[in-house]
Length: 155
Image (tube, rainbow, N blue to C red; front, top):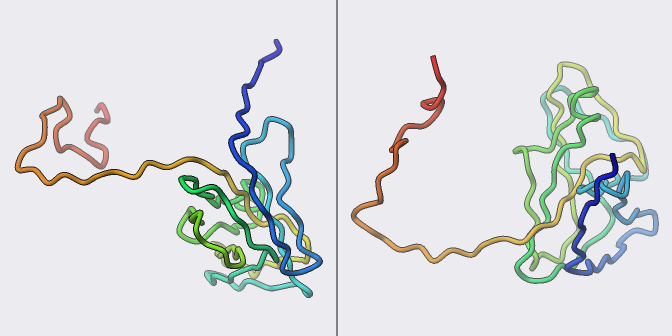
């Protein structure tokens, strides 16, 4: 069964290489939402157990206002090597013009090595909402109410 996927190209992202060895983000397949990010390092880097190291990508970028780049772990690197993006998700705002660094955390008890040119994370671009916060004395009621942290699980 063939599935038609609608892809909206809503913006160009300008990439400025800060290092001639920097790799422009790539997609692993035509339907992939995430773009792979690569380590732009001269020599291998060892990440000790439970340590976080900022890995440079060798580029900076410019996105349209109203968009954000969300940095996620690569599933293979996370499940096979225990290397994950620190804090779960990185956020790169559209007004940031510095080099993109990926804070990789080694969640294992074994030192892990990152090699030059290795795919280290993935980025997904999306729009975001800018809310106007309105202070109030009362919120509308719902069936759930203020129940959280597993309150909707059925016993």
